[in-house]
Length: 412
Ligand code: GLV
Ligand code: MN
Ligand code: MN
Image 1 (cartoon, rainbow, N blue to C red):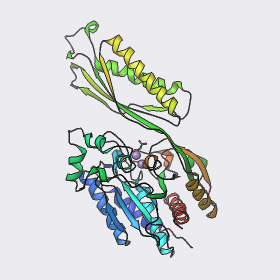
Image 2: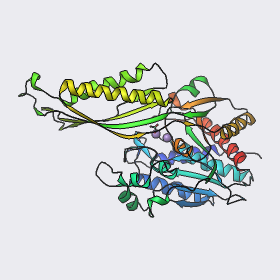
Image 3: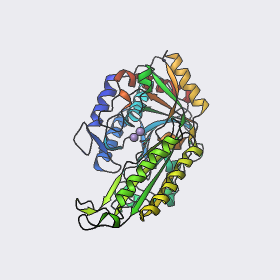
Image 4: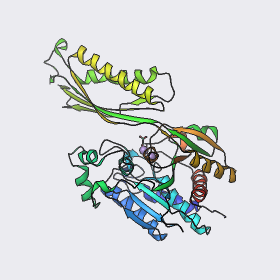
């Protein structure tokens, strides 16, 4: 089989998709179920249909693009990623795995390959947590990690329920139907930009992910006393933002204290109420995101932050309440899929590096129901979740080549 990746077509599709944004390109913002998200999905689905692939969409909008194999009832081989993008993002996160997966299928078709197992390209709904607070919504649901009852309780910041919003976006049917039947996938492999600097720095073509770190996130609500910025004297204040500031530094200290490179913690949101120059902040909401490859260590950091919040609440006479949004276990990737990736790299004489993913991905949840691994390609300076995110066409091409070869092996 002679595989040829149409690099120009793929790069021009990535550029075209980057124009579909809630804000002025080149900045990409595509929050789930917004007009931009729906337009991006429709645009990709049209490309899939041009390639004579069948398309099914589930009740939460996960989209399954299928190339039927000669044994259509055998468990399928899956690939794919997401199209939604956080505010102020770039063109490549998720998109490389979706359009790259489509290009891999097109290359296999053009090479005359006939799969025995069906090959399915997935577009997962809401990998990003922007709207409903929890990341990997679609893959959590199809893997049964998030129950229908918990999903039905999710609301966005305007109190719209997931159930209402997904129906308005045109996704019908009971949420309980999203969970896939056991054994749906024989294997799953996701192509993604690294979102870190290692491959580029070391000059290595691809990363083969062996482990995905365990993510956890919380909302933290602080409440003190508001009042006049001139009138209330310093000894009498219960300033919620001052308490939040101390807590943010404790978050940093707790993450650094493990001494492990894999422990990371971030406060990315700080909402201040009432948010006036001359008013003492009475309420603050913080987001907390903690990750580690080691679950016990991750939970240890979460606990330290919790204890710090108790100390700060007492010292400053404010109340601090935490609400856990998710606390997931890490994933071990499957030797079967890793082996197929390694073989593919060797066949095409491409250098590869076994890696850990510190970012989370839909693969974290697919790994709960199917043998799964991931393939990383370098990205410029490791930049991601910012508009200047970039992956070079030749690196994307190598990733798609390895992906196509791997899908062929797994589907044969
Ligand atoms: C995914 O976008 C992550 O935050 O790891
Ligand atoms: Mn992302
Ligand atoms: Mn991503």
